[in-house]
Image (cartoon, rainbow, N blue to C red; front, side, top):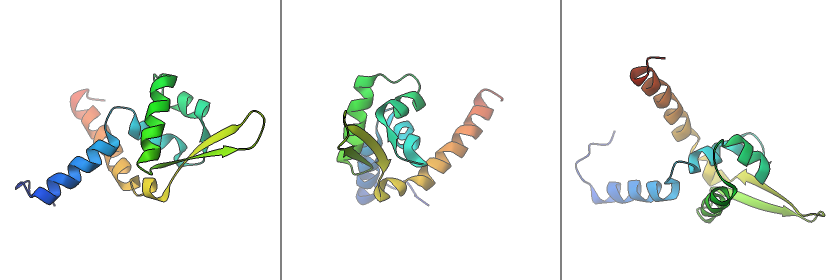
Length: 112
């Protein structure tokens, strides 16, 4: 368990994680292709409320952090699929804990 005593290495690792996953969309985008690779339009449909411009930007950032893999197939027109990398899969426990925390938080705040 973290003690919060200001260990510089711990603070740096948390900062790195937050920078890789910052914003309200990245974790939702990452969750979208968790069961199978998906095309851009499928991810956009899963992540309700995101614009194409933001989705494109966030996918590039996730790809730069090696959390998502972009694969282009030589079809006409070209087919592009996004899948989670093994590094991205390492966030499964984080996503699961965030899911359970979100359920408890909703119950505490909203009462449902």
